[in-house]
Length: 602
Ligand code: ATP
Ligand code: MG
Image 1 (spheres, protein in one colour):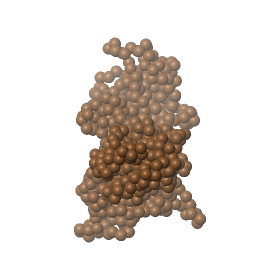
Image 2 (cartoon, helix red, strand yellow):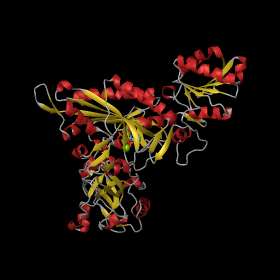
Image 3 (cartoon, rainbow, N blue to C red):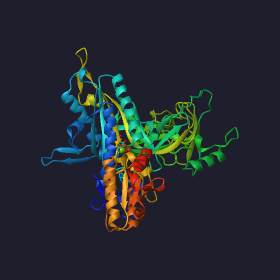
Image 4 (tube, rainbow, N blue to C red):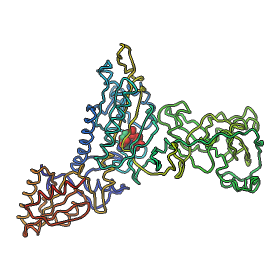
């Protein structure tokens, strides 16, 4: 069916929407693909649905190719299954909860692990039923703290989520590998470059996990890669740990007066003045141990204060801490991390702002054994036994010099807490790391048995024994893909869709008022359609050529055909939207020439 602009439900806009910061958001609205309904919540217009449908079709084909079967769950779900896995609580403010008229609790699903697990439990009972992979393309709801950039980060969005069920680890490995390969094919077909990076599993638990990041300057994720092929999410990079140093002969630590040195900079200058290093080299920020006080919001709503010791030349990275701190505090689920405020500090008078020390052995000596802060104390992996530091003495205006890790102070755990920098070493020895930005397009997880255990999904094995099923979970952001494709394919005039997801193959413009032009264009539309070419036909009778061409550029169909004045000479104009290259084509050759051009497009 030819799509006709005279009747199509669309209005293009001249003005950029006020809230749009990035090109895809701006253009999808201006070109009439989506409309904003509420913050992070969008309505799909006919053109938008065309693109969305094509993205979904590609996803479906590749899911089918690995034998995954499509199902469809409700978005409105009861509380109980999420209670069984503790995610009702762990999601904190991240989900939409609601009640029915009888006061029962429901939620709008942020993801569906629980329901898939229960569905398989409901119907399957034997190892003979496995493996099975199921998926859906479904609307998800998350009360994102910062919905942004249109479809990129919505509060309602569409995800393809699949789940694999296997009897053993080898089966899970195979299902994971199949999904991973399908993901590379999907993103290749969508024209989205992706890098699979090692990721932390976060709230999901489980063992192995990779994110598919699309490198783009508008991405919110930072990842690193090395020339030797290492790639990881910044949260998941592990620091190359230095060797421990033998401290048998090290001198005792000394507490010194360092008035007015509450910052690393002032401390470093004071150190160079008051206690120059014996070998004549200057002290730098890297010689200081900075003790950062953080407030962690636990999923239970409690606020816990922890102190983390890091080399003074590195800033802390709250996202890395957020991803890694749960296990140190014995909590699952998402935690929030922020700098402790004045009020937090007041509750712990032993923390002297600007002069905070590691606070274990030394504290006891300086402050008396009763005076421990009792707070969890973690350190960066660079703080290994035998490293020597200048750090706070837990007394106003005093620092301690030559404090030896593992001799003068200990710690409750080691955490990846500081920023990763360009030039840091890759953990696998594959060279220096380079920092890049990206957006997460997909995520594959080996969940293992966590959900199956929580929801008691077991099957009988070959020996008639009940065994817990092992699972994988695999997501793709479908609506986010539409935004990412739009973001990577546009110019100052508008969108330029890759053929595979374009709302049509050809944008056919009838220029002017001449009936003969409209009749010829009509015929071309029909001929193209019967040759299997999808046509968007601008058949609006009283719209100026300027407006029509402007709309064609904005809407971004990859091939533009203009029937106008040239018709008198038997030619029409054929244009490649991306390159801008145009040529006059004899009317009789139009279909053939369009097919030829289309074959060259991706
Ligand atoms: P992000 O780190 O971007 O918040 P996530 O880790 O929460 O993503 P998953 O829970 O793994 O993502 O969801 C699977 C996929 O769903 C993601 O890879 C992403 O493509 C998409 N997605 C997640 N959150 C959103 C959102 N708010 N809006 C649009 N797409 C999203
Ligand atoms: Mg998220």
